[in-house]
Amino acid sequence: MLYLANSGISYFYASKRSLIICDQKEYIVSIVNSLSHIAVKLLQIVSLILFQSYAVYLILLIAASLLENIVITALANRMYPFLKDKKIKKLSLGLSADIRKNAYALLFQKIGIIIVYATDNLIISKFVGFFMSAYIPIIL
Image (cartoon, rainbow, N blue to C red; front, side, top):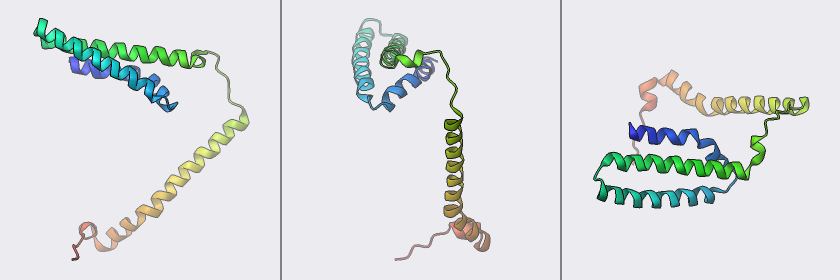
């Protein structure tokens, strides 16, 4: 359960971490991550020597993950204060139409790629049979 809690904590803060990484500032996340790992490993070694309890070891891991995510969230909030703006502005009709047009174009492009690259396998398996189309003879 403690491992599950440790994994679950990171999902609540993933958006802020991803925002920093997408802004090509992954070095910030790496620095926080490295410092957090060094600190938690030292604390875990001390806790194992003092308490000899695996539960304390895991609780320190959870606390470090939570603290690391809180620090990254605070950094993201400071770097991108405009994301806290609650004023929602409606997209202009022209921009909305452009986005819709490009989304449809992307959809049809993906369908076209699938048709071009996937139909040959379907046609071969129809005429030759499924098992024969999967059979690849080794030619020496």
